[in-house]
Image 1 (tube, rainbow, N blue to C red):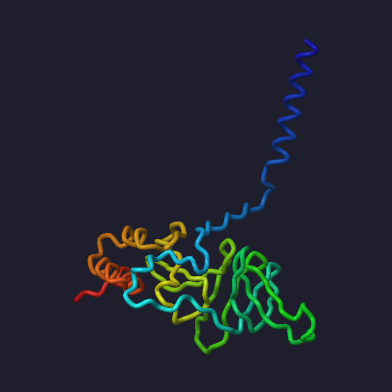
Image 2: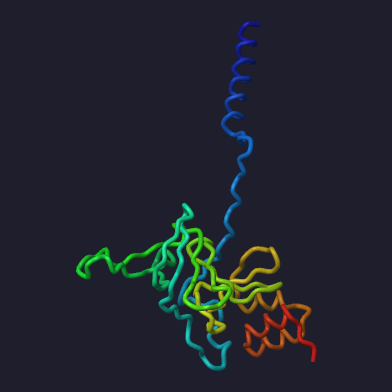
Length: 212
């Protein structure tokens, strides 16, 4: 009898400790997981090489003025270029306060160290803003029912640089011919443009149907 009572007390104590450790404190919101970034890498285009009749120049990043918003919400203002290495994308810039002979003159920062990356070197009302997804900053290239993302903060990108796509509030997926054909079902004109290799125009036709 005494042993059974001790066992009951032990079980009750164990359950109390478990729920104390795992219960969510009042007023604390569990952070939502980041969207999954499909494994597309620079220079590994998702599009087949024979899709485009005239081979276009692959994505090119230029030097721009950027606003880097760090994890603590502080900001850095730099003139830099988005680049990549074996671990992912990063922003590189030159620190003019450091001597040219110093290896620390070239700075770099990776997406997970930031909240966002904003291009600010023109007078437009809306500048390209990259949100952090996995090992990259994703910039919106086309916005609509089908939203398309790229890893370059440029305006004049070729179709080959359209890397990811999202339908409404669905998951971010690799953008390729097979995937796009499924998403464009029901829009004959958009499918015709896709079959001609006109990727951007096909997506824009789906987002904003033009009746002829």
